[in-house]
Image (tube, rainbow, N blue to C red):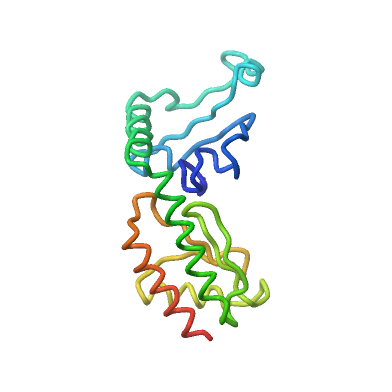
Length: 179
């Protein structure tokens, strides 16, 4: 769900827009966080395996949810949010890569679009990534530790370049406190 709706630049976050998944499950981001909605997408070859009446959901086909999802997808398309995610993600990785050349705390930055992570130079059982996330919070930025020594950054698609640089300043300041 974290990778949905162009946060990694392309629609299905496959790594390349040419990849067509057999089944694509969408949720959370499909409505832009406005209304609970999800979807399962597949071609007829896959979907025809499921016979009518063998599946369903209490709120399946909800017209309000469908309208919200369509409107959210139109915003993503019309406002160029996939392109924005790609552009800002490249800036994020470039800036953090520059920072970590002299860092003893961060080993690696990786990501696609606006979904990025830094790998902390410590083992997975360490609390260092957690401690850095707490300090990031205290300094004004929310991030999530994952897999022990990895910090994930997943800002909203509507983030501006100015906001990105504010976040980068907070990240660099915070990391420097642990050097």
